[in-house]
Image (cartoon, rainbow, N blue to C red; front, side, top):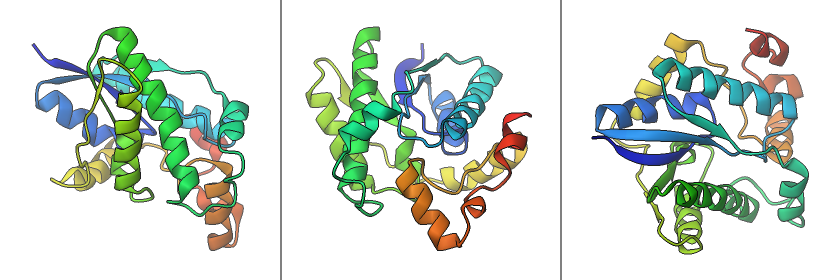
Amino acid sequence: MPTPIVLHCCCAPCSSAIIEWMLQNDYLPIIYYCNPNIYPQQEYLIRRDECTRYAHQLGLEILEDDYQHEEWLAFIRGLEKEPERGSRCLECFKWRLLKTAKFAQSRGIEAFTTTLASSRWKSLEQINLAGAWASAQTTGTRFWDKNWRKGGPQERRNQLLAINGFYNQQYCGCEFSFRGQAADSKSESAVYSKPLADSHSK
């Protein structure tokens, strides 16, 4: 019988190869979409819908937490000017992974992990620190700190991205990462790989 595990998913491109690997290795991922950091809300909905599409394609359960962006902004207040991979990101991971740990606890599932660990934009050390912290706050849970950047999932990610035609964003999620990437690209429109409206209508 497959081992259930709660998988916090940030987006379909980062999640697809991980989910496939889990299914091939006798794990049953229960997908948890908790990403109140994502800005704007339309972007949040697109990423959610892509995760949902992939989960339903595989017959997997996916649950969505509330989009509490204003609460999230209050939580990271004072850290708005921190750089990517700075202290704001760590606090953001803590918010989302604590929610994930509590969800796992409510379902009686011990282990939880996150697809954030596959993202080239993020610090693996920060993610593991946040996961361990979240587990320590939540009795009966354990954070699985697997390094999804090793073992070939990145190549498979790119294959699944093409096969499924996933929307592939060019910034992590919050307005601060969005503005930073837009500034680097000289144009806010350049952070998107395809128009938001076109992606959401497919």
